[in-house]
Image (cartoon, rainbow, N blue to C red):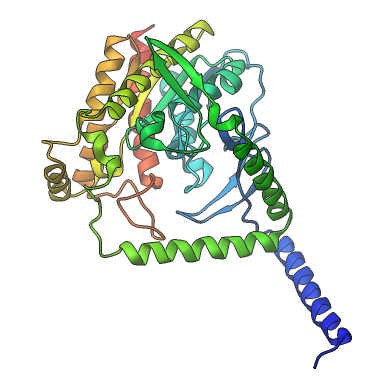
Length: 387
């Protein structure tokens, strides 16, 4: 039977092997950190200064700036003669799955500078999972101090509406706005509970420990990938898009009180953000970032999906957002028609990656490039008319 000496040797060997692995990973500069943390202002936010690889979907090196956003550092004071455009969005715009220079905000900066014949600086304040309520909080607490000339609200029709209604979204850590007698009131009760504060402390401790060790990060990454592979194997035989999913109610006119509240609250938030930006001396622009099924490069798949939902087409959310913009004098760039036309003409998947499933998930490099092309065209044309 092993004694204390043998047990001590085993423990020492394990510790030594772990130390060697840790040093090797650091020398090779391999890092898979946790990029987000819980916080009381919005529920969660990116961690400032964290950098490492993201391979859950696609593959990219992620480096958060000193405010925590996936972007390069920007001075608060706006350089003379520079036009500033701030992007507010969710995971579609944070774009963890592609290299920074391949994201549409980065490409948009170059295209706008060229077409406007002046220097344009694009700042990206997008965060995965955010709904419009969290984006408004980010606008007020992070964006407006940079004095942007334009704030582009990158509205993702795939989930931004139901993210704004607790009865549909049900996220226990999210903040919401509630519309009561025409007035928006912040509901941050989720982040005021003892449950949330305990969870935030626990998660914060775990994040600190994992982010301090490359070995722990690697173990976590292997676990995440294994779970992802298992999920993909379970769903590989399923339909590409499941019409029974409640998320896809977005493609129908709202028929329940919860969906009606989701839409009216969302619309009120967009108008409120228009007023916030105007009060700060800027202009709000609105663009709809399309859902994967809307631009899937197979008309038959889209038609079958629409039929299963009981609708003629999948355009309802985009049409409603466009009407809202027109009704309230908000400049807008609609991406649905040009992106769908591009996908059909070129048989191109704008969403999805080799390590996930093409046609689903977030924009790949092609999606970002084509979106930036049409966004820049719309912005340049609209700004030219306003001169």
